[in-house]
Length: 252
Ligand code: NDP
Ligand code: 8X3
Image (cartoon, rainbow, N blue to C red):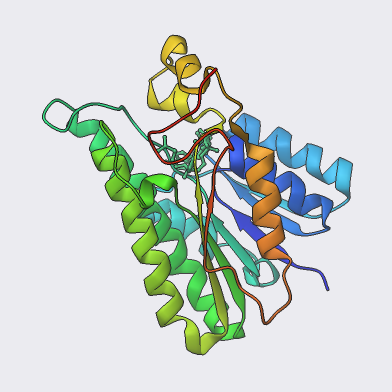
């Protein structure tokens, strides 16, 4: 049976790797992101390589008008979304709460919480109507623990954790699966974004141990997405072997 997945933030990292794995499993895709050139060329590559259907939607999840406009203008057959991967997100800065920038907090809250909610608010009614669907929210170990300089990123990911739980309760009568995935350190563009292009801070994040890759998380997401109808992974924490918790790494 042919399925459709919507993956937000598929221009890099976990979202991009997940799109590739889903494509390998013959799942048609709606991929989103702000960097349109990357999005369009990735869509083309997926179509050529895997012979699937792909729609590329170029919007910012922080802008609800855009979210509603692009999603609501999908053709009816594309609205039959089976899997929604709420992946678009970021950390901005890693500063003490008394020193951090308000603009960083706003960007994280607007993207990681409000953006996820805007997209879900459009897609969930379509899933409820069809009495099926699977929402996979990309949370973080930061949604389970709190670490120095991470207060607001941890707060937004704790919010994602709570939203996943709430979604699972509210959508229970509609046969909808909700999976909350909480990775530890994954080497993507995440730290370059967090540290605003500071390569030294990026490299220091992953120095001395083997971090997870976007592909590792994509494998896990795909495993969850392909489980039988009656099986759901509610909540999953996945770490590099060299990471015990959000702050403790075994670095060589
Ligand atoms: P990347 O920076 O590589 O990817 C982030 C993706 O999100 C990009 O495709 C980016 O696309 C998209 N995105 C960011 N802001 C917006 C926005 N306002 N509107 C639309 N798309 C947006 O990082 P990761 O792949 O690592 O991050 C993916 C998710 O995983 C995030 O939610 C992150 O918090 C979470 N996570 C990451 C971990 C890690 O260690 N890397 C660990 C745990 C969780 P574009 O810039 O083109 O818009
Ligand atoms: C990303 C992982 O530990 O930097 O969500 O918060 S961490």
